[in-house]
Length: 578
Image (tube, rainbow, N blue to C red; front, side):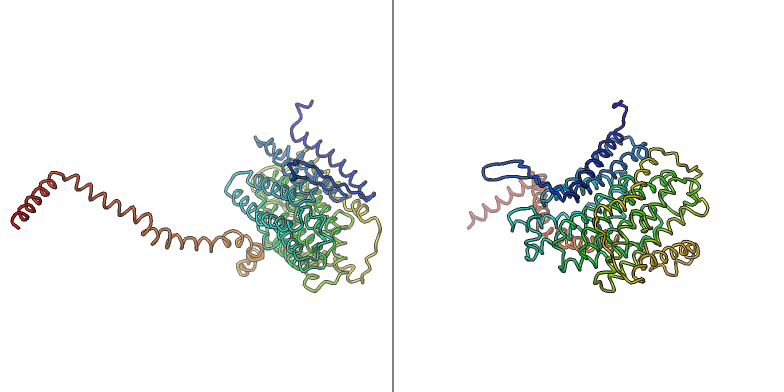
């Protein structure tokens, strides 16, 4: 009966069916090379028309279907994960608003409607990050919102520059006007906006901080919605990047982000933050391949990454749920014997992340690294690509070693189990997609096989780097106890690498310290200093003083009257004598 169904189940059915329909439509559009451009005239007054435009092509339809698939399974999973929450209906409505904002962003070829979806994502993400309502959540929410505001301002400035062309439909001008300096400025502004949303250096601090949100939100935000909005925007604006200085800048920044996130994840002990840093690393990979001009490859990795990253977060949520809200991987251990199905899902997602052959991540990641080997890259970019790949394997195996093997280290005496049937069903859907999704998308997006011809050393370099990284991760995890005992001897370097190169401090206290000090000096010297003495407070003091004298005169009126009387008599006598 419908009235016995929960809002989670109804949302799941609706979104899942819509996802299936959009996927079929997307495949049709892809095979037929078909595009629909819809113009909806909202208001027409005199000579002014307000027109809403939508672009439906294979790229937007397939991406929408993936976003809806992941959201449907996350909402279904939330029914059990958030079952203790009294306001679960409000939570699901917030998630649905989030998905709706993403849909608007995906199908907009117009900068104004993109800004609506973009700001909708920022606003709803703030509401979701502060959902648990404690000081940590509020700080994380504020950092997230303010970091994203920089991108919003860049997008607003890009809209202002689009006035040069007489329309906000950027899709008309990308190919024709890309050599003009106005379009170059728009390109730089769009790259800045994308860097804030996709958390590239120096805006990376908000992404791990946003882990304060409930785990289902993390699974949605860090796989297919908020953080991928910047990548998707740059895929659409790709003609502006081709052969420009912007693309070289993007390649460097994204490569450094990928390297920094991979390094930081090896020093982190919070389960959700490790997965968040792996998201940051993969976003760096997508952005750097975009900087090289391979927008289809970036789109391919965007979709495959969304599948296994959502699964990884859902598995982490199931583990945290069973560990009674403990997120420290040092408290875990032997999960493979306690929660076998969840552990299997976690391992499959981890292997897909590392690019294990024939899982979802392999098809996109291997192709990206081979194209990087084939391109004219300098040594720095080449090193960042392959070393970051090794670091991915390193922190993944470290996570597996801490959580899956060894002995159980519970902080509380609580039996772990795999009895959350609704959570397990939600995870199973994504497990299936993490196994078959990569090959399916590969056949669809690249129907014509092309051979990447490389020397044996370069062809096997990705595999070699991954194996060495995995071995190092395992050895480091094994030696972790002795390292922790001696960590004070190299404390500074561990703190530097473990705190994302001090970026959270620079983004929070670092960015407000100087303005606050300047403000304090101004207040002391100006507002509470000489301007106060000569201004309002000085006038107040003088009027008070005169009022007191006046009051004193009035309080002693008889004495004053007699004194005045005597004074006048003396004055009259002197006058008469003269």
